[in-house]
Image 1 (cartoon, one colour):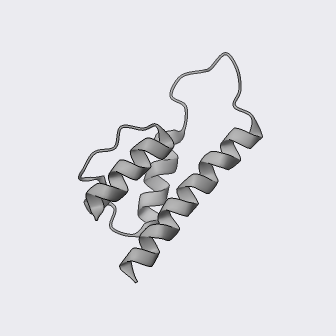
Image 2 (cartoon, one colour):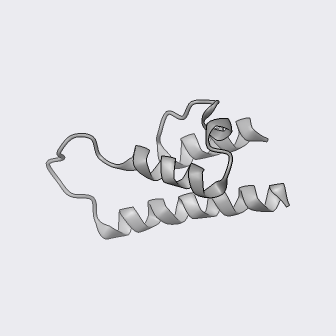
Length: 73
């Protein structure tokens, strides 16, 4: 189940996610904080992301985390 979640998050967020990330951050909140940190830009970009893209990315994270909560019961 954790591998499936890792793969879904990788596809949805376009991030390279370590297979151990889910074990290193065992709560939904800890995982979400780590993913948000990974999504922060590391270098200045020439164009700013639109609020719509940021909202879409946040809603994708929220949906994946909700699916995980449902699976965990």
